Length: 310
Ligand code: SF4
Image 1 (cartoon, rainbow, N blue to C red):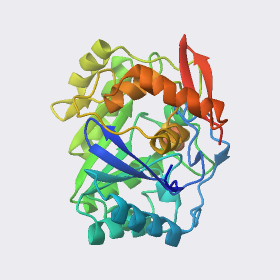
Image 2: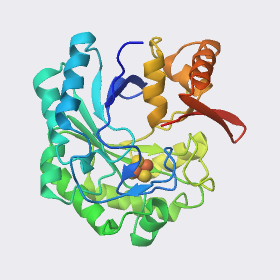
Image 3: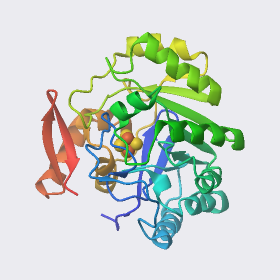
Image 4: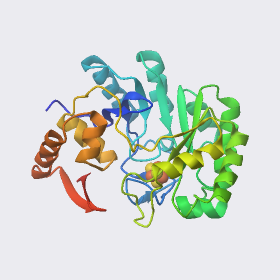
């Protein structure tokens, strides 16, 4: 195994982004929210203060090492195991991509800190930004996202609206739909009306296709999501990954598996489908990492999920 990365993971195949190299700037599950649907489990470190959570020179050095060793990706994405805008220097990664990479950058953020002008200025360095809007008022926001103290629905909306006005890149809004919580037509229409005011370029509908933090969270069916997507107009797409990606097979090394599972617990079938490789060989690699003590497996809803021991 070559020297593993601490802050980079992937490239991970993505329906929308192709081969996406992930950059993770935040310690595991450090976030401004504790969403009921989070696939990383409960948030043990709910914070809203920004800081230098990991050393930025080390992150940039890993990006340089990756560029020298391989440097092939369709996108470089700030994402991972927490909220990237909590890092007070996240804009430096986006600046590095502009200056040194041949592919666009993407910022996946929950949007809660965009009410701060300095966060909006740094986020605007990304070529594509995806934010979240799955609630329609403070009560539904608290119920779905269980935010840190001081993180409010009003600030989320204010930040997303202000960002759209200042940002000329591609802005997507993800709506995460939970059956029985925000799936009624009346709730969906309220969310759609708020999104119309923000005026993003795309609207992505997602649901709990992986084990959520709160086991009571229920996924929508693909058919039900398609019906709800119509309420958001022509910019809306169902992005929940129910289907196999139409991609070439990607190499699935032990480092790739570890880096990915640390951020996204998954089944062997999901991984084999995402990377377009054989299930049997994926199971073999995963079980090898289980016997080395790096991963563990657990039954969830009748399926075997692999989790990182870290
Ligand atoms: S889903 Fe995203 S925003 Fe919500 S708790 Fe998980 S990491 Fe944080």
